Length: 149
Image 1 (cartoon, rainbow, N blue to C red):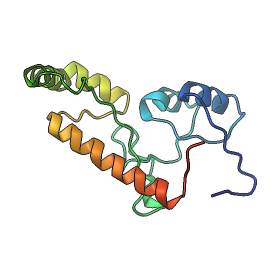
Image 2: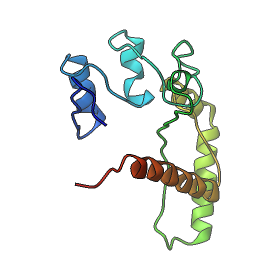
Image 3: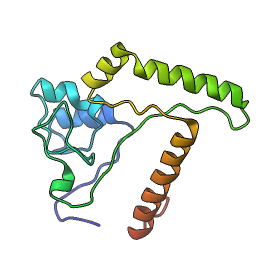
């Protein structure tokens, strides 16, 4: 889809995109909360909307995109993986330790400062998230007829 007067510029990472946004070379970008929250708090960037399904706890006055485009939701997430044939007991130990770290009050506070929310769970939960996200974005790719270059 093309919009007259809108130039889409690919970036090799959000740091370069934010640099151009702050410098006035581009007018808008989609950035994760952790990468942009400090600029928003400092008044250097103005948040127009969040792409999550619900408003952010750290920016409660900023609307969601879904308030204007019903059904819109795009969240960034991070996870920890291990090689396919990692023994189950090692995966279980890693999962226990990661979940314990995510439950730590200091970790929760730090994540909240970045506008992030911890989603502890099991390897099966994470696998389902990956499968669901893959299917969601595969539908978008097919609907938009996006092809690899």
